[in-house]
Length: 312
Image (tube, rainbow, N blue to C red; front, side):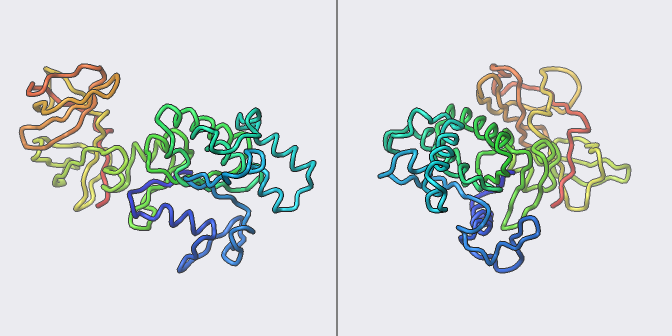
C-alpha cells in the first residue's frame, strides 16, 4: 500500500505513529486486533526502512544485515545462514564483506532492505525507499522491491511523493490531505475515478471543469463552451474531472474548438496546452512525438464516460 499526498499532508507522521516513534493523540494503532500503542518501537512486529538507509558505516554489509538478529539473540550459525539468504535474495551475496561507503546508492538501498527483511517482519514500513536513486535505477529497484514483497509475503506500507512509483508498485493507494485519507483504492480506481477535486488535481493534474447542473442531467460549462454529460449526477458546488489522455485532439471534425498554446515533448507523446473559445485552459496528450504546432487550431472531443463528477 502506498501513501500519497502533498508536503505536510501527514504521510510520514502516519508512518512514524505506526512504527511507534510518535504517539497518536487519539485512536489506536492495531494489528490483528492487538493494540500496539503500549509497545515500544523495538517490540512491535514490524520494521521501518528509512530514506537515508541508516547503515552503520563501520560495519560490513553482512554485519549490518545481521545486527538485528544479533540483538535479538539469534544463535550464530542460524544468524549466518539467514544473513546469507537475505543477501542472496537482494543480489548482494558477493558484496557481503564490503562497507557501505564502497556500495552504490542502489546497493545501499538493497542492503537496508535485506536488514529489514532478515527479521521477517509482518509489516515493513518504507519512507521514500527509492527517493535517493536516479530514474533508471529507481525503476529497476522498484520492480525488485515488488518481487521481494511477493516472495516474502510481508505487507509493505510505503510513503512516496512519486505518483508514477505508487501507481506501478502498489496494490492499493491512499491519498492524504491535511491529515485525512480522502480516498483509497486500487491505482486504477483512484486514477480513473478521483473522488474529490484535490485527488483529481494532485494525482495526474486532471483538467477540472466547472459548470452548472441542468434539469436534464447535463452540465453547462461556459468556459468551453459546451454541455457536458457526465456518467453520474453532479453534486451542487462540485466539478468534473477530465484526464488529459481521455481527450481526443484532431485538426478537423466535430467537437470543441481550441487553439494550441504550447506543446511539450514527453518522449513518445506530446503534452498539449490548449485554450478553448470560452477561455478554458486544458491539457491533452497527443499520442505521437510531434503534435500540432502552437497557435494552430484543433478540435477536442471525449467520451461521456471520461467525465468524472467530483466532490468539492
